[in-house]
Image (cartoon, rainbow, N blue to C red; front, side, top):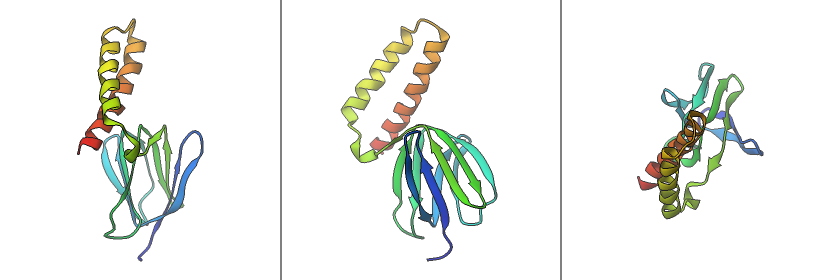
Length: 135
């Protein structure tokens, strides 16, 4: 294996992953970006989407859905501070579709802009997750 990149994925509850990889694709706010060994320093917010971890060059990636967060690349490696992570294999599509429908109804019934904005943020990650599991 060639050079690897050290990475950590951290949620508010715990350290989820602390390992090495050949490449990691992160859903940045301005588009996906690949973190590679020797990458220039970078900081980005993360939009709801899939983090793809390529342990070895040419290997199939392991995939993890993140609701959002921050990513930082430094000389020490990549750190992902995830708001929350979701195991894609554990997603119940019927439940997810119902939650999306319910949240859309709640947005229509929102009492004020603050409540509406919070519900729209929830809807955004649920729609992104539904697109990922449907693909």
